[in-house]
Image (tube, rainbow, N blue to C red; front, side, top):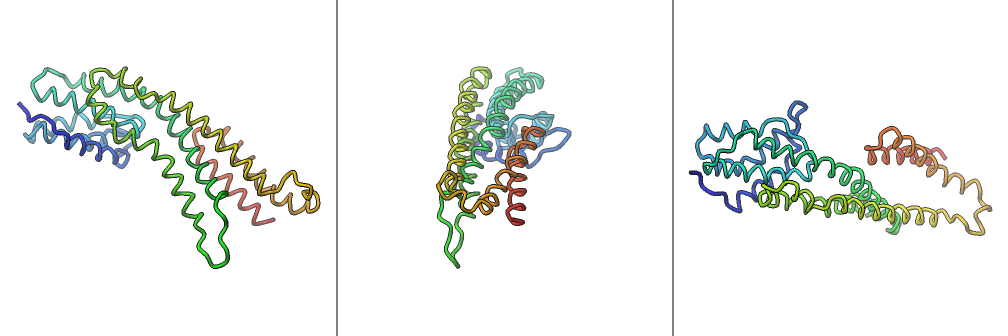
Length: 270
């Protein structure tokens, strides 16, 4: 009989899961990272080196899901390994099937939530920071350079980190109810809420941009050449963004960077 798992083992599994993508391979995808994250729990369950090696081999197989939500599959796998180490007749196939039953829906719901909704929203928040902060006076540090990436990271991780931290414990507790576990995360509801927040942020960006360009004021036509030069980079950036997203809809951040680079080049020329 193996020694039962401790809360500290689940905590170490959680911290190890943060490195899941560091061991990504084309052949097994997140399999090596999954096995690495399992190691703290497996060491407790299998003190014998041969049994530990066998358990690690089980989890080195192909595995792929959204990295932010991988902890839920990890927790379920830890729970099955604990029951197996305690003497229950749980075959390798059942453990693998349980992992896959969570991996597919978590990837299907997590990819549009985090990659296509949250990531662009976080980028918008960072860009808004540039427009909201006052530009520096001469010989002062431009703090906007720090505020933009910092707010982008904080916005993304404010949503993603709670899922990463709670994943292993939740997956362990609901290992026998994978369907109920996925439903309880309410990922579709999160996506709707973040889509609305993104629409508000995008509207705020347009409003602030128009305010800075002074569009609609009585003096707009007095300096039409300068106004057109100021507006041209935005138009070019928008065209690049539309073309890029039509060809690569999942590359929001990369397309935004390309649009920004195109706008910057035109602004430098004009």
